[in-house]
Length: 186
Image (cartoon, rainbow, N blue to C red; front, top):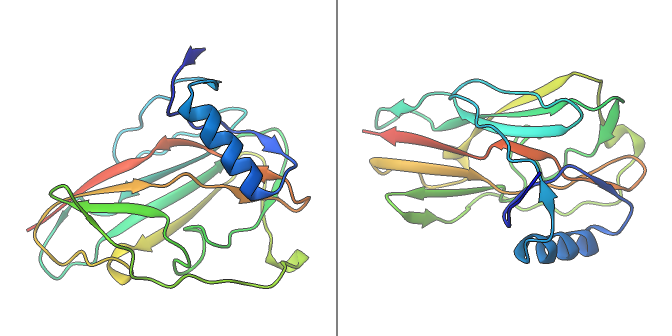
């Protein structure tokens, strides 16, 4: 184990989401969370971590022409020893983004999220997504729909930390194994 101040730790906590987020941010900022340093996957290759719920992003295409859509592949892997049920709302697993989940920048300038932000009623059992042991859920996300990625340049896309709600109202924070991709637009 190595102490690092900006780590992502997979864990299950039965607290309201806002409390979990504040506690986790404080502990990470102070460097008080111990976690494994995760290996980086090669572009286009996802790694499932044994015993962990993990996520990553990879470019669908790393070199784009002017009119090509900019897309990333989002992968959620269940490397735990049990099936899990998660609420995919506000995550890249939805068919369209409903929350700002990426930091997108071109040549060092951050591009604001221009997509929708959705508020919903309490979830029902049908809203949860079951992920079996060893299973991966993938989604191709079109960043062109929610960010102005029309300019030529080198884009950096960073996946923001995610917090999944499970069916018992606990929260799961996956380990991010591939947090950033670079895509060049001509």
